[in-house]
Image (tube, rainbow, N blue to C red):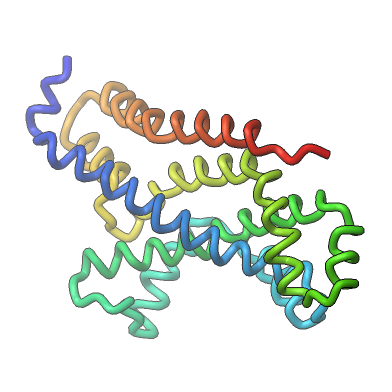
Length: 224
């Protein structure tokens, strides 16, 4: 039944999923950092920063991810010559894919964190300002720690979606799991079986993430 796997050595299959894991991890960290900054902008007292954060989120999350990924490759690389410090084409594509995934996913991270910020009682921020803390200090020391604890669940959903969205990187030739699956389907006549194998691989990647972060969400929930 699984004879088709003999044509593809284990390192190539595991390597494709390892690339998927790397895309998820690097994009996840970048999205968390950029998404947090966007959330801070959206609640900032500075109108220009609020306007930028709002415009970015509303525009980016309504653009298909495929368009963003292709733009990072054809637009940034081919037209503007952005190489992300890589001379190798594969490394360049990998880094550009991360850039596109970060730009897209950060918009959803921002909204998740902003919803957490809205759960923090306004009186705490007012008390912090009353004792002389600046907006940045209030956000960093008082608001964000509570906000993060209250949105672990939503952030877990964003991370799971990001893991699945890494398949879009195949559009610019990044050798992750979806690209290998496409190649195997084109060369073999067992489409359903190949699809089932790769679907199982993604379940293995995403299910533990959801269970662990779901447990953390309950464990670290803010008691009000």
